[in-house]
Amino acid sequence: MSNDSPTLSGRQVRLEPLSRAHVPGLVAAAGEDPALYRWTPLPFDAAGMTRYVDTAVRWREEGTALPFATVRLSDGQVIGSTRFFLIERWDWPAGHARANRAGPDGCEIGYTWLAASAIRTAANTEAKLLMLEHAFERWGVHRVCFHTDMRNERSRNALARLGALFEGTLRAHRLASDLIPRDSARFSIIAAEWPGVRQRLSQRLVA
Image (cartoon, rainbow, N blue to C red; front, side):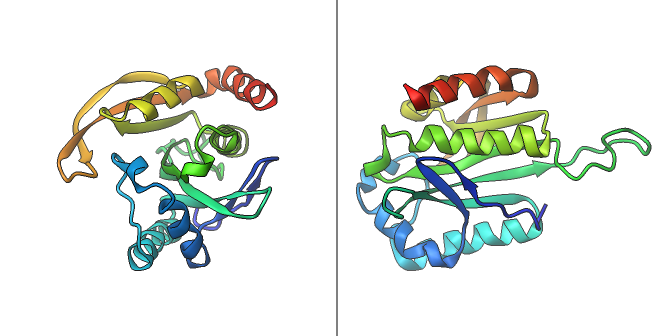
């Protein structure tokens, strides 16, 4: 998957392959209102953001992630970041129809954050639509999952509005932004649900 670095473009935002060139814009976006990221481990200085980007790029080179900078089309401003990660290829037996296909079988969408000025705009809806289209229609995945800190009510509500199904709580699942083992709320969308989710997101963008 390391060679798959597309740019995903809509009417509101463009998702560009993340690089160090985005660091100044990401620092500015995060600095609009740092209080928004209570549950999101996010750096606010150039050195920290460079490490953040370098880690994401290394994951891309290793084939386990596909990170993006989120760019607002109206003014070309970087307004956040998101990524595919935990990109999975299942161990299909030789001769199976899916054994030699190029795309993965499952992935997670996460590390998603937006600048304060982009909250409650169409940016998040369109970015999710672009990524889910890529996952289900280009890659042909069976499942896309999402995890968020159980304490992050805003994120849990956003995932529910997206059309993702709450599957349950994973206890002490990941390191939280406040450096404790966090409980994660797990959501997912499977391939059979994608057409309905796609219609719902498309309607929200034209409403």
